[in-house]
Image (cartoon, rainbow, N blue to C red):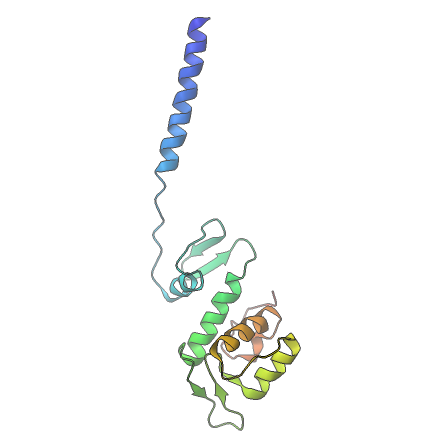
Length: 155
């Protein structure tokens, strides 16, 4: 009887020891350096949430619905439209040129601002363009940008 209790205690400590040892051996995964990964890390301030995402080749697949999806799409649009530079003018050959990191036409910016019910947004303000771009993506207006992902659906 004494030996059974001693063996049970020993086995319990061994199991606890193995669990502790394996949990301490967690090695951060190697993340492939490509544009999608850099945009993802930039959107998350360099912090990876492995439990929420699967990184597969050139794709980042959200396992849980999060704002990061919108951040990634917004980052891709901003990078494609303006190279990530706010003081960029585009569509100069058209009647209504586009401006800023989100390449908004002035009329489109204020139309979306009104639809969003966000007060005080300014077309020339970089943070306002980013904020409104993210709102537009979340609310089904991503197709206003030719660089919006083709298979993107309203979130």
